[in-house]
Image (cartoon, rainbow, N blue to C red):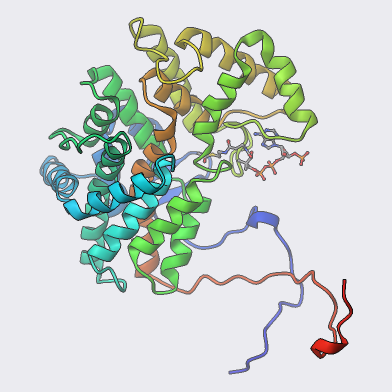
Amino acid sequence: MSDQPTTPASTELARGLAGVVAGRTAVCSLDGDLRYRGYSIGPLAEAADFEDVAYLLIHGELPTALEHRSFSERIRAAAHGIAPEVFEALRVLARMAPDCSPMDALRTGVSMLGQVELDLTPPPHAALVAQAERLLGQVPALLAAWIDIAAARPVAPWPDRPLAAALLERLTGRIPTPEEVAIFGTTLVLYAEHEFNASTFAARTVVSTGSDMHSGIVAAIGALKGPLHGGANEQVLEQLAAIGTADRAGPWLEEQFATRRVVMGFGHRVYKDGDVRAKLLGRLCSRLVAGVPDGVVGRSSGAGDGEALESLAAKVEQMMLARKGLRPNLDWPAARVYHALGLPVCVFTPIFVVARMSGWTAHIIEQVGDNRLIRPLSLYCGPPPREWLPRDSRESR
Ligand code: ACO
């Protein structure tokens, strides 16, 4: 085989790989409707719990009642089973970097779990599935543990409840109402999977080299953290807090446009006519805010009370559509739902991680099952060919 690089006769450049079909997947489709393994997102968001959806993504079919029960038990067992040494290591890190973000703690935590489990090479399919299920339980437990550790509290036990209820209880420190659990669970279902987004593609690229699942997840968490991807849900709340009141929305937006800064929670690489997930969750968000008793809504940050925040959000939405033709993506209502549930902003993106673990692991299993190294080409734009110069003959710059 030749060592010469091969360049296609006509090289087309798609900045950011926009519009490029980079592989096949049976996990999810965005063609007209968002579907997980063929099931439309509408009914899933309305009727499925997170365990239903995670099972569907990882195993390919909706679980029977029996499968659902044993899957939920395996996830819970994994949440309970994290080695205390992992928490000890996180405690040391919390002392060294008390202000580090929970996303960094999750990235490090998953890396540690991979090391503890000796995750060296891609194992057979059944072992990969078992690893995925373990991570599904471990990651939310790690997140809740980190919040305790960062606050210098002992790590509280993981509640024996379905994942959405357990995580919400751990992150708010109170027993949530069934309505709160329902909408929180819906956010997890909506965040669970989204085809070849940046973090999923990062995970697939890592395991396409023959590397292990934990390494793929670590890369995915790193990719999700960025504000153009998962990090946007935290920035949505920061921006709403910065605007303050509806009458300040206009000048604030004009300032963003003038300085070419993006407005978080708007726009999408694939959805140009609006994100179906944002529409679904937006409706639920309004209902949640209208129905939650005083003192619960909007207690997580300085972003204002629920009703005022919703008016502000509606004003920003109208202006973004009128001025830029841009519609909200999922992060726009998700941030407001989390705020209304009393969650601190620093856990918004980590909650996205918890949900997307299901999609990431499903994609990793799919990639490993039919692997070809992911290695695209680049279009060179550097200096033309140059002659080597000995050190003494180089001119100073
Ligand atoms: N605010 C202001 N302007 C925007 C926004 C925005 N949110 N989104 C796109 N634009 C502008 C672009 O700057 C570009 O302007 P230009 O033509 O003058 O340069 C124009 O709209 C077209 O942009 P696209 O090519 O459609 O955007 P792209 O596909 O490259 O980016 C992205 C998509 C990164 C999501 C972008 O819309 C953005 O930065 N949004 C804010 C961050 C965000 O909410 N991310 C969450 C993504 S969804 C998720 O992770 C669940």
